[in-house]
Amino acid sequence: MTAGSSPVINVPHPNIDNRLSALQADILDYLKSEGAAGPRPGNLIGHLPTTGQIVDGIGRDRDKAGFASVSRALDRLQKRGYVVAYRSEVPIRGKGFRYSLAGAGANIC
Image (cartoon, rainbow, N blue to C red):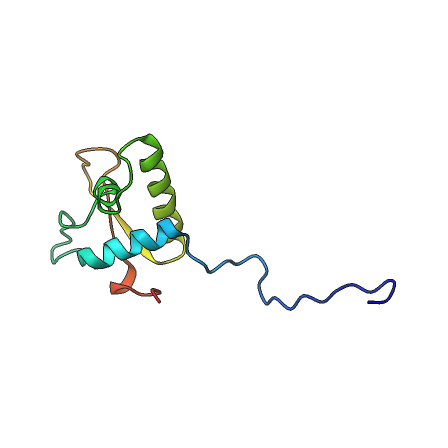
């Protein structure tokens, strides 16, 4: 490299990271194994897993840290289009979110 020149980095979108964390991959695997593919006719969502069921299903500790990390991972997966969050009008516990794979597993490699 000569003086005054800079290295060339050929990255089409340097701010986009398409990799999944181990936790995100575990969550997607769990949702896939549960067959969580969206609401049933009549917009029924009772069969979809809650955050607590996902925490238990992937073997995380049922404490504040476990729930927080899974909730953050679910939020990131939702923003990236891997997961859809559904919320009932009257939640029984917490915020009442239930989760399914987006488009019956769209975006999953």
